[in-house]
Image (cartoon, rainbow over all chains, first blue to last red; front, side, top):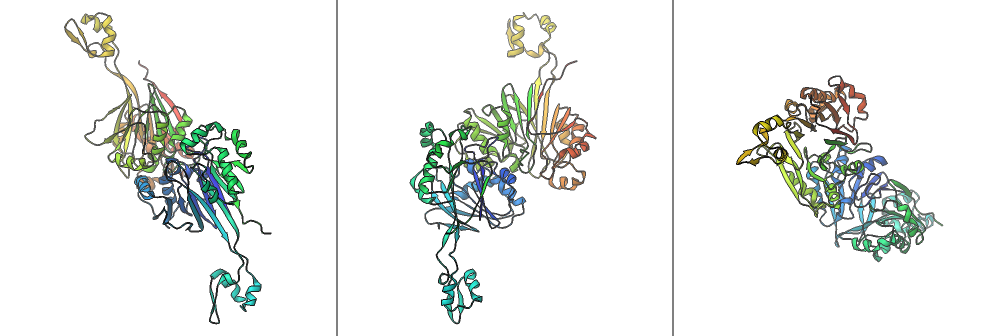
Length: 305
Length: 305
């Protein structure tokens, strides 16, 4: 199971009642973040998942509302006793940005490891427990959407194992350890396992226009967390100009992707009551709901059958 | 009159119920800040004084909890429509620090002007409406305490003006415009004014050990806002080691300075209930109170008599 927590719902600037949009994910006791604006460490403190086990922070882009909380968070992670390396992932130029911000946090008790996203970089990335894919978004600057998958192997097929003449004590080893040597012959898991079963998947996209590739990227995710900078349809020219989305555009994207559920986030400071416009999205994609500060869910492997 | 607002009371890291220590001052419709940690713009938004009229931000030092909110604040000041220059004041090295932080806020609609504090720099500084003095504190890194004075001229003495034979229509001009030419002779304000009267004064000191020079620096201020990182007397070794103050040390400093009032701030995250220890300070300096988020006051010229 994958714990998902939307840490805030604000875009552009933090507000008294809105933290900036960022995401925390937890899998097998390890954590990763996507984005980290001013105040992210405060809403994380409220969440209570701790700071020490954050193994990676992925940045969508380098606008301040998505990264300004980094120096303070790094210091807080250090104060939590972390000494293991922390991976930072983001568009090309990440080390230059982080070096600048670290002028006020020069000493950390853990090393930073950078992964800059470009064509030659592997995709998906394996970041500790997390399998993370990325896809270019369509914003004013280089920006990426992220997707996290928890894969699920096929079921062990005892009939296949019996047919191969493998003794039962080796069945468990074959599934857990991979290849096993028995009587001079190598046996691999695929010889005794069924096809991969549907896993857990979620995607996070902000900031962007609703380009087609994002629907492909978020294909069949259980949860799609997507920006909705503006609710009012009349703000369409502004959304186009600033390369953001309307609620209705995010909903159309979720529908195209075949997502299970959509959470809207990254609300403009001018959007005082997002509730007023949520119906614009629900008319297109009924499984839409508004993000809230520390709105959490746990995603499970889909039921089989 | 000088409006004073303590924007937060936290030290080291922002907390769910504590913004980081920073100060807002307002005089004749213009504002200045001292320090600007992560979240300062949020507590300022709650305060409601606006962002556009901030003419200067003074930094005590470059530890993240005193400056990490700068890039976001600069963007918010820009969004408020500022185009006039903004002055940034702080220890030597300020432009390098700010250049680093501005990698995520490269485009601003107003210029920044730097004043680095060193021996050759004038003291006090005139920052728009504000007369600001500075004094080296005693911390782990170069750090300054600040003092703001609102001077008050002496009273106009009509007897002196009459004795000089100055016609009444020139009396007002002489006070407001300075020197006046009358019948070929220059008259200056000091010829018709009494001695300067006591003005408004406040001082702000964090982070520091309670060194003697700070008492001289804060001499006779109406309000002294001072760090009290720890309340418990048993934390003295920690206060010495990390170059901070106990509540009782801040109180002794306020007493030595002859301050009118002391507000304690910059509480350690480990200090859950500062109230528990405030008596330690009040035993030494009864006019002590605990800082609170957005605790405000207005300082007036002292009554004459």
